[in-house]
Length: 251
Image (cartoon, rainbow, N blue to C red; front, side, top):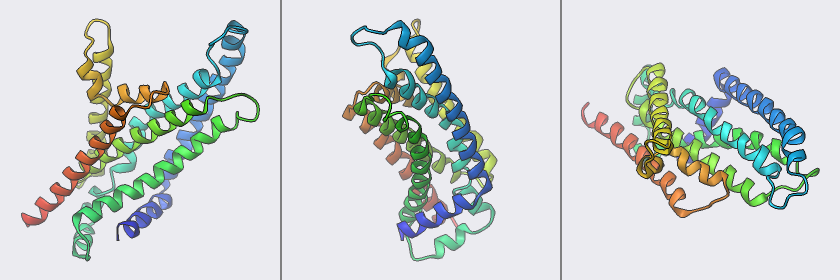
């Protein structure tokens, strides 16, 4: 049943004009940034460091910044994708039909989340085509590329889990989107305040998504960073399940 719900959710996203608009805008912005990074590398970085051992390559100068900006864009993209997951079901009174089906709340939440992950993978696959297009013409650091792609996926998935939970709290998709964006922005503020010279704090950096994400972009695959994202995702999915279960018990 989980994968039936996931397939239905993924199909519903691809039928949504909003999802296609988000995908088009994301790829447009990423495509423009990709061209800018390539031009900067060819005209500024490569001539400056030509012949120097250990100089920044195309992976450091083009692909890592591309993934970094994709992560920043996900701050706005994921609240828009998750705002309707449960709030729209509640607004249309179709959540009652889901509850009457022979499936548990956990299956319902996981089905919605896996459907969202399917759309995230589609977005990331299209973004990944840009750096892969450089492979025939230059030497890429495949380890750093794969690490950055994994970090971007985990970052997006954690944003999605938080947005899914917040969509269970309201029947208004707009409120769900604004609250999700506010939470994610707070995590960015934690990183900025924790990494600034005057108020440096390892705790703030650890609590923020971007501290772990940047480690992936640098090619540092550490189980601490992986565990952070997995625990974050699990925590918000459990909160979503408990929220829906408590709502059912109170009826």
